[in-house]
Length: 373
Image (cartoon, rainbow, N blue to C red; front, side, top):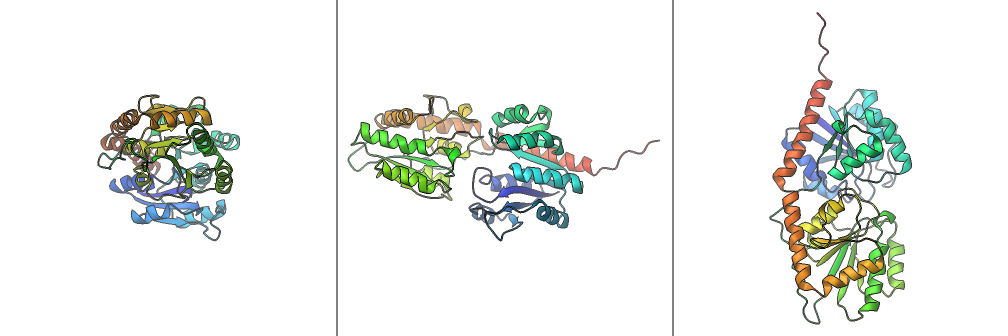
């Protein structure tokens, strides 16, 4: 079948990062897929799509920040009619639902996050039946979709958007060491309010005050509207041990440079960055939001920040800095846990079940009604 994968943008966030793997499996099942974006935004996902040889189209590319209108998207889909629409993120889902109903095309829709704005939750509750079924990126998001949107559990599938790679090299564990050895802490994510990047910056100021001689450096990676604010905050706190490293096209390579990973978000879904960090063998210190508590077992393979305060984060970072053996042991456990939970065969089985459901949907959608005798 021909699938048109409709997504908000090619920004490069958590909804776009798994596209090569998701579409690669769709193609392996014999289907052709085109990604259609309502906007370019930062365009960081384009390199991933091109490297994987995935066809993509931006409906209106005159202004990277501007979303295409419903009329423009309708016109494109009418002219390039697929067998199925597969939607990702709220705007694309709402557009896809309207267009699917107007053109008689079946729709399946992703849910990625536990958080929906009140307006989006209101709209999606009322359009939930316009998607034939919904795909959650984790068991947690499946539960939230059922509760928030009122989608029956029978119409929700789970396709984890992370596949562990046991062949990927891990990071070098923290060994303590001499004067030139630096304990490297880092975080990846869009520099937007929901990622709460102020938290680790304020924690680093507390660390400097409590242990002035500590050789601890924090790398903050990503781009977004809060860049200037966060840089000013770090500078105002004397943040010589904080660096802003921009968007990282290879998150796993970045993680291999670290000893500890921090995820300070106010809300998440699956949170691929945490999974990538754990696969790299890093203990993760994270806020207990979204599906994160499902994979981080406090004190065993990482720490859950409760309460999520700069003081608590600073304490956990210093705890691992002064205990190299514990830091290494927790990182090893994190990697073992993620390789087991997201083993390739396990995730592929779940993904193929979703694709086969889509195949049945398209087949039944176009099947003529039985004639009455």
